[in-house]
Every structure is written in C-alpha cells, then in structure tokens.
Image (tube, rainbow, N blue to C red):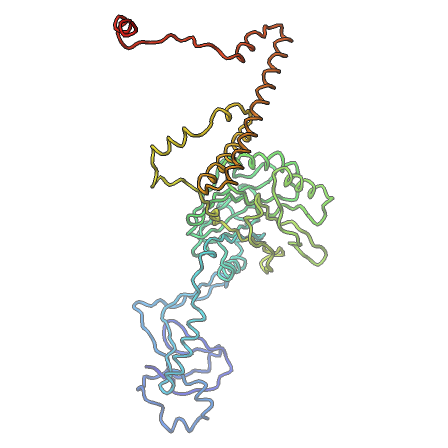
Length: 482
C-alpha cells in the first residue's frame, strides 16, 4: 500500500506517467517528493497537525500500484500532436480509506452499476440503427477521433460516410474503428469524393460488385446486402452525387442499378448526399430526384434542413426507403464534424408472427360407417339434382334436413307439420321447374327445326322393356308353370 507523505500546493498541471509513480509538473524547478511505502496504519499525529482536517480528508487517498512486466514508457511527443496515442504501462486503482470501507464500497458499487451497460432487450436486438454523415475527409485526424467518439456514444450499427476523401495511399488500419468493418468506394485518380461504410462485426455484410461503382460523371453507388443476426436481410445503397453531375444520372445510371436490385426481392434503403435541395421543390435537381422517387416507389423521410450555414440552409442529405412500415424512427442529430447534420433511421427487421388461425375438423371418434350409409339412403337426392345453382341446393338441403332432424328428435306435431309443409313446397317447385325446362326445350327445338318428339317421349312413362331373366333351366321353369 502506498501513501503520499506530504501535500504541497503547486499551481501546475499534475500527471502520472506509466514509467513510475512520480508526480511531474509543468514547472521543472519544482519537484515533488517520491511517495514512500508506509504501513496500512493511519498517518502519525505530527503530520496531522501540519495540515487541517479538511485538507487531509480531501487528498488522503490510498493508491495501490499493480506492476506489469516489461512496462513500456509513453512515447515522446512529436511535432504532430494529433498522432500521439496513449500507451498504458501501469494501472492505478483507487483503494478505499481504512476508516470508511462500508461507505467506499457503497460508492464504488453505485459507480459500477452506473457505468455497466444494460443488456439489450429482444426488441432492441431486432433493430438496425443506420446513420449517414457527409464527413468531408475521414482521413483528417480530428474528424476520425470525433467519429470514433460518435460511434461509442450513439452505438449505431452502420455508419455511412460520404466525401470520405480516401484513396489508395490510405490503408484501412489508419481509419479503423474498433469493433467495426470498413467497406470503401474510393474515387481513383482524383482527390476528394468517395463513400465508405462502417458496419459492426456482428453484422453480415456483402458488397454487390455488379451494381457498385462510380460513373464517368462522378455518381457514386455502394450497394450492400446486410443481415442482422437471423433477421430478414435488406439492401443498403450509399450514394453521392457531386454538384456538377447531371441530374440525368438518376434515370440513366441509378434507375438501372435500382431495377437490378429489385430482382433480389429485398427491402431497399438509400442514404447519401445527392446535392438536390428538396427545400426548393421547383428546382431542376429536386424535381429530378422526386421524379425518381415516384418511379421507384421510394419515400424520402428527411424533411428538415441537413446543411445550415450562416447564409443558407438546404436539405441535400436523404434517407429513402421502399417500405415505410420498416422504419420505426428517423431524424437529424447535431454534429460538429462538418457543416452537415447527421441523419439516422432505426429499422425494425423482426417479422411479426401472423395471428393464429383455427380450423374446425370433424371428429371420427364415434363414427359408425353403417349408420352413416343408412342416413345417406334416407336423403331425397332426386329433388336436389334438378336445381342448377349449387348455393340454392345447399341452402335447400340444409334447411329441409334440419327440419327433419328436429322433428325426429323432438317428435312434436308442430315440427312435423313444418317439415311436411316445406316438403310440399319443394315438390311444387320441382314440378314447376320441370315444366319450365320442358317448355324451353320445345321452344328451342322449334327454333332450330328439330323434332320435339324425343322430348315428349321422355315425358311419357315408358313400358317395361327389359326381359325377365331366369336363373333356372328353361325346361324346369316350363314344368313348374304347367
């Protein structure tokens, strides 16, 4: 256990180096004594008399030093202060004072609970958080540091950047973000422009090379197939259109790749900076973009200015989707990285389960085939076949059968009378239908010069035309007859 011997008042910045436990100041002529190893007991009374009780309580902290093998000292600063990175050599852990262990443990527990991230719920795990920013050079050291801090604070799953200004001289290691994979579309041969995407390592990402590229007029398209866990996958297109690129690129270049993406059968999300001010819908650029949205069935979500300066405000950063119900939340966020606002959208990728459907099936537990055949034989099928409409047949069949079942079960005179009345009505309708059918057939035969004899013969009862078949010998039959 290490304790500080004295507490001098020094008007200078104090820092702890990784090479030792010495305290250094910006003033070289002022030196602070090295802390000495003491026992775990409290300081002597003589030392307590030199300082007031308040100052001792304010600065009396025990520092436990954990030594690590082969500790590397901090690298000396170079002329480029932006490239200095911390090099941890030794770790310093605050230990509780001996007198107030219980209070210290309570404080440490509260601090730990506050900084430990809460586990994500199932609903949060099914969301994909996408953001876009016109960064104006990610290789700028200050911009890169701010982007890293942004990803830690906002916890976006995917960050799309336009105007990345990357080229072949910049490696992925120079602009990496811990825990993220970088997908780039650099503008070769010229400085500036370019787009890139940072995606979490837990997300499956596949670049579609057939549709990804930069046109001769500078229209950028980075198409990616994205899948979060085992949820449904989507298509993400990160696009950028320079201000000098003609608006015909929307229909000549962008529409062609968009139609090809539709063949994959996925929902499409488009983010980027298209330099079409939608706050001026009558401008040629805005009209071309809105015409593309109408033709591609895309909905533009951002409605507020995304780039605000001292003299102007414009809406040039967009998020478009082919399915609005897929988006749970969207909006703008203030960013100090560039003069553009950061735009974002939260997507719900979990497919809702359809409501349960119920089917009624007949139970054959108590089924008796013989009884069922007897019931079928009792049904008067002859009057059902005469009807032409199947619905009328069904209604008639069900109504008459219901009355018959009711009369047989209750055995009441009123139920039997209702059944007989309905049966007479059905027979009357059958005779009327037969007469109408014969009349129409005779009229049809008269108009077609066909003989109506065949129709009339069918209406007259026929004589028995079948010959009797004997199972015995003819001579035996004759002898029995005689």
